[in-house]
Length: 139
Image 1: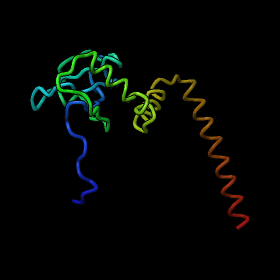
Image 2: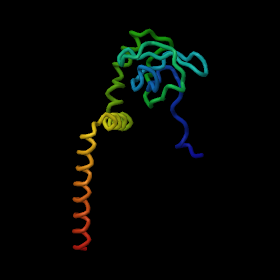
Image 3: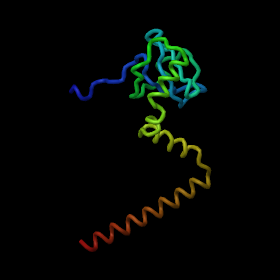
Image 4: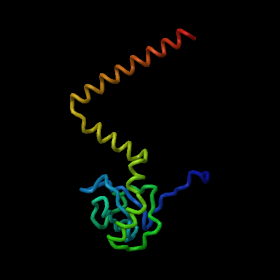
């Protein structure tokens, strides 16, 4: 195994996580304290995630870490450090968040919207085929 494929996302205080389950699913939070090998105390005052104990199985580690966050920091401190690091803006720019957003949009399409998407795909396919045929003919 080469060094460029080593594991880099560790469970640590200050690690920004994506909540995968429960009423806060899809929201970002921060690990404030590690309880044991199964659970961590998370808090997301800027994103609407209340301070609570959460199992690692229901969290996804993101590449973002709040380096200046002390262990067991209070909610106000977490909010201050989280907002100062602009994690939400970085998250919105990431390909991961973009893909989640497009998947959610597709999931919420109506029947008529799906029909319109089908028509647009057919139209694009015809244009691509015509361009390919033209390029083949001229070559």
